[in-house]
Image (cartoon, rainbow, N blue to C red; front, side, top):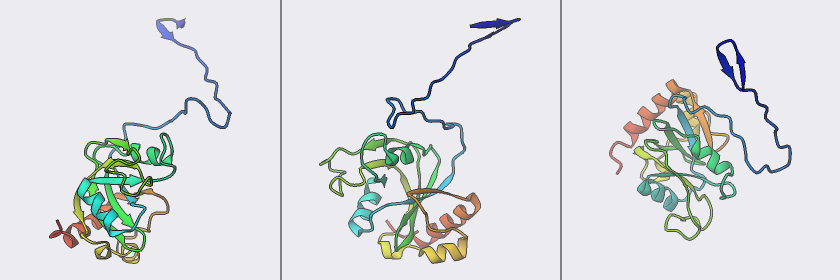
Length: 180
């Protein structure tokens, strides 16, 4: 401790581990951000997978399906109030929902939620607000780009400009209003 006048301060230094895999990974992120709108790629484009995600109120991430990998990092960055627009390659925007209570989990192999036999086991809960009953009912990526200025996601999760995302969510809500 150092005292200068009436101020009490601590002096410290940080040594960064330059080895390939440190014991304790450092993460620098703010937990005080405002909720945002994201594209989120659901990874697999089978009807059974989409029906499963809808019925369970989940969104997935894949990667190595192990603790601390990129799949966990993507899903744990979501905060309460984030809006997620689901994307399926070849089908486009297939629904949207809200992360109300971010509860991340890595599904154990063989669990009833391990729908893809060991793949895409990272999960977080979502409350679907509007979702296509079938993947072909989605709003094609070309139409999303032309009408809303939103390009298909280039990674699992991508932030969307608020104004464009809200317009797309309104369209999806109208399109899927009678879908249960």
